Length: 201
Image 1 (tube, helix red, strand yellow):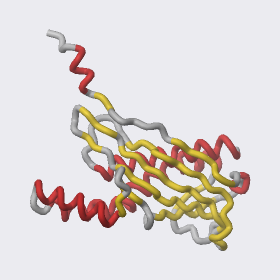
Image 2: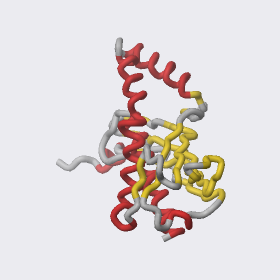
Image 3: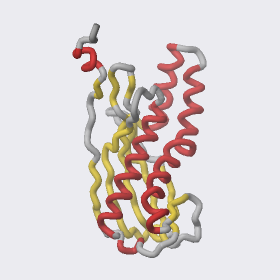
């Protein structure tokens, strides 16, 4: 017996919004011929959820919710959240940038390249973790401010780009907020790389 087609309709994604990337100032001409670009990630001023919560408040409230459901789960999640930038978000962004630049243009984007002439600062402005209930889900969203500066003079901003609502989703189910946000950083890296290639190469 065939399953009613209406069952397929249960597997939907709701609340998807398109990513918006805009060049506020500058261009990418200075990148040509550069072998490496230093990258720094900043999270100090980011807000979360539609309520624009400071990170400290978000961690406190979300951990408390998890603790109410399962004792100890909130404390475990705090450790996962603290590790996510270094283990998931930053590698995802860098992987996508280098996928487009390293092989074809011999340009490496990486953290800790203090001798590189230019630095890309990836400042996280806003995060929405999304949710996944199996048959229905909503992608994460990542909003960032991307700035190229001179490594030796951080006040010298060469280019500034805004990236709003980069969607974080993957095939199948993902019940980890941190993983969904990681896909948002991957999407940011992919869209940013394509923008640079279109404008400068």
